[in-house]
Amino acid sequence: MKHTAHRSFLATLSFLFVLAACSSTKVTDSWQAPTLHRSQMDDVLVVAMTANATNRVLFERGFVDALKNNGLRATASFDVIGSSAPTRESVTAYVTKSDIRYVIVTRYGGAEVTKEQVPESVRTYYTGPYYPTYGGYWNAYGNTITMTRDSYVDTKTSVVLTTSIYEVKSQELVWVGRSKTFEVGSIAYEANDLAHQVVASIRK
Image (cartoon, rainbow, N blue to C red):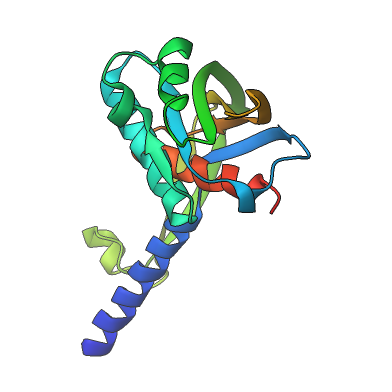
């Protein structure tokens, strides 16, 4: 009994590791300036361009946490600019009086809808000699059951985000990329995942 429970625990643990390895956010394309190096990035301001204050807080803090996990000092604009939707003027006013060296701005870039025709599926399963019916119990040869799934259209919606990195001193764009989020569940998780991918894509 203990061995069975132990195997069940290990199977559950392995499944959780597989889920953790799967990412629903992918950076699809990016560009960076030759002058940008990951080792030089520090003192970063994270700005989420959205009027929804809750989404902004969750996204910015999720992004900031990921940057800190990568050894970068980062600040959420919500914590220093305030609850009002960030603007170019408010961001510029803050960075000119701070030690911020880079500004990361993420904005909504639209949604993409894909449709795929899934064909009809017919499958027959062997249920064994102990199929839960009175007659099936006494049939030594077992039973089979056929299940039919009708054809249908599978519709998937992916959210497109555009992330840009600006160098404060030169005010120039030094990195830009687009990402797709296929399953938007936790905004904080998606932000954290996206930040890790952005950092990983920047050359050292």
